[in-house]
Image 1 (tube, rainbow, N blue to C red):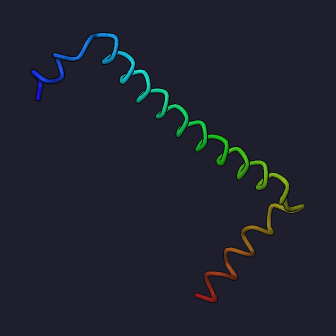
Image 2 (image 1 turned 180 degrees about the horizontal axis):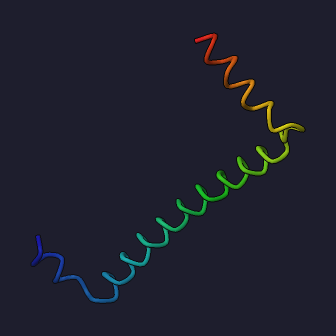
Amino acid sequence: MWKRLSALPYSIRLFVLTAVIALAMVVLLAFELTQRQALLAQNSLRVDSLNAPAFLLDREFLRF
């Protein structure tokens, strides 16, 4: 396999490596954008009181 890989011209190997890295970067960018949207949505659901999340957690625990 290594002989077959080394038989390819350097420019083709470089292009394939660059394409793989670019694809990985696109996947990471998509993940970053979905995480950013989730954080923005979470900020819009702010609660007025700090006790509200604790109360909701306690209520869910008691339901469990």
